[in-house]
Length: 269
Image 1 (cartoon, helix red, strand yellow):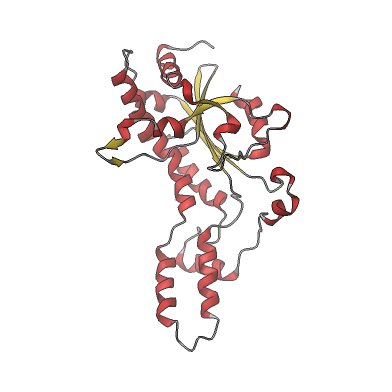
Image 2: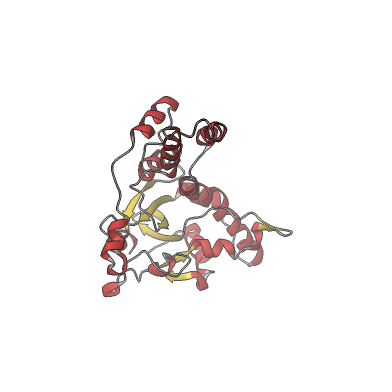
């Protein structure tokens, strides 16, 4: 791989974090140490940099006793393809993104309370819940939407600033470099066909449903809020399109966890 001067500086920057150069399946572990990536047959051993870990190791995100760590993708990798320098941002999410957001479930709870006879005892509470629904925005959706944006515009520039100040290296205009590179963002989520640890009954219990309640559909139309009746994946696609149009990322999309090893073979290597 023949690199330009700036590309070599960027690679040297990433290589300054060898302690966070991990196999993909390790980066994809949840807080309990369980990976969402299959590991049978030596799959998902390909190493990338654990960007979350790099970010949390940097003191630049601390001021006094306050941490202001940005939301970052789980992993970062690079590749030179022809004249193009590709930067891969990978987010591993141990959830089914084909299901509707928790906002729809909240709507269903409120509608259920309205349909029960409480002799007006819960009128005030139901009114309050209606107001909460109006202002509610799904935390998981917001986090996934923010990660590529904050990674590119906040995290990487500030991590590089700390790296440059601590090391005797030639300066790289990191913001311009990121703008000139082709940034490819992928969210890796659990496939409907995935059954962890061969627990078939547990696997089936988490399968997605394409059914959206009439209450969610009706409220989505009334309030022009498609977060209510759309899947996480559908809602995220609107954010991805914005980032692509704005030139923040070159490409954004989704990969099933059981297909990620093929993504490694076809795109990362």
